[in-house]
Image (cartoon, rainbow, N blue to C red; front, side):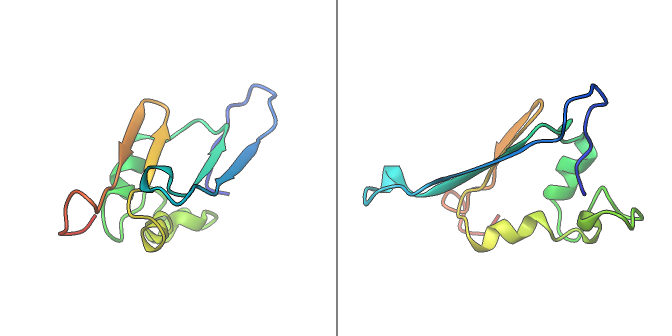
Length: 100
């Protein structure tokens, strides 16, 4: 319910792929979650990068309005990547021990 889709007749789709990895560090397990939504706006990216911030504040029909949804990935990933439209970035705790 947090995604916006183009009005081009294409049905909303989602894709989840789990990569088990191996015992070698370079083949660590990871999950890919993708869909055909319009992508993140600058305000969305700023919301992902700030604590208790959301681009969905006041939109009571949106799950992400509390500003903590995406941040839950930090509990299970040391380096979550975001690829959306023109944006490509990661939060890497391995590079900065101060935190994300």
